[in-house]
Structure formats: C-alpha cells, structure tokens
Image (cartoon, rainbow, N blue to C red; front, side):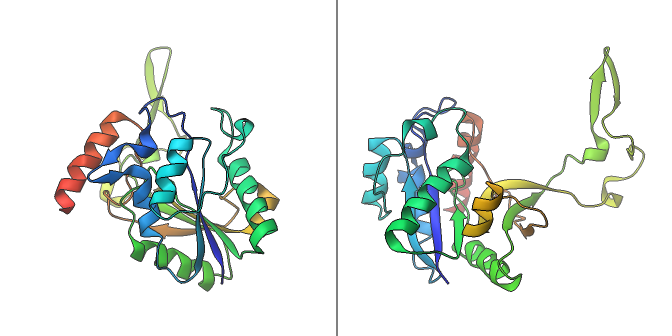
Length: 229
C-alpha cells in the first residue's frame, strides 16, 4: 500500500496573512500536518504543493518533499484544490511510480492525531479503497434552521421538526476538512475528494476537527493548544 500524503498550501491567504507559516505554539502551522503524517507505514511521501518560496523552505525544513513551486494558474483565489492535487499527483507518479491513494491533509487542521489518520487508512483498506472523508457532529441541525424572506422567518426545510427535542433528532454531520483519502483513479475520474458513497471518518473532538479560517479560529486554536499542554 502506497499513499501519497499531500498538503496544499498557497501563499495568498487573505483572512489570515501568511497563515500557513504563522507560528501556532512553537512551530509554523504547516509543520503540524507534516509532523503528524510521519512514521505511518502506508504513507510513502509527505508532499507539499505551494506557490510560495517561504512556505517551500519551511516545509522542507520540517521534512516535507517540495520539488517545485506550483504554477500560478493553480494558485489563484478561484483555483480548485482538486486541480492542484491532480497536478501534484500526475507529477509524482510520473517521477516516482504509481500510488494507491492520495491523502489530503489541509494545513488548517493542526490538531488531527496520528491515531485518526491510521483509523482513516484502516477504513480505506477495509472498504475496498472507497473514499474516506473526515466528518464531525454538528449542533446546528438543518431541521432547526430558517431562512428570512420578506423580513419573515420560515423553516429552511419543508420537512422541519421545530417541535422535536434536540436529543430526539437524527444525528447529522459536517465535513470538517481534516481528512480526505481517495484512490488516484477516483481523484482523476471525479476531480474531487468527495465521491458517491464516501465512507465517514467520524471525529468527535472539537479540538481535533478545528479548521482555522479566521482570526477567531486562530484564537480558539491557541486556547486549544494551552488545553492540550
């Protein structure tokens, strides 16, 4: 089993400037995702795709493989993660041979654990290489949501259950961004890490499922780091 761990890290973060190399605790944000993927037997390489020379230098310092800078057209605000991942996958397989899976580790999920990665890989193998997606329970149930139309609240879903107690509602989940694993074949076929009948990797920890996108998220990450210490 050969799995390529891929970290996509653009330099052009707007909400949090230089987010990927900003220090969270005693090390840059991107290094958290590099370090957690080390020493997992199924992972053949930890590869970073970036358009930024500073990110490249720091990622290499922490042991990632960064053979080039990503082309400009794959690093704009409208570029898709799938296209950047396919670019990296094609280059890697042309240079180093075929892989069985591509594991996307977003650098904005610093607290995923090695145990969770191993559980995700086990699901990938156990379900005959079906795509595996990290998800977390959500407390904002869709059957309790509203839209505002003409200044008036109305249920967002026709099949709302506004009178049902929260504990009696069916559990629902959101994609948390911390784990995506798919075969190279399916990534090329669907141009996505999310395919029909993907297998859920349920992550219940709020800390582990944190996805840093705003300064408020960053502040919560620093709070979580203090709790972990």
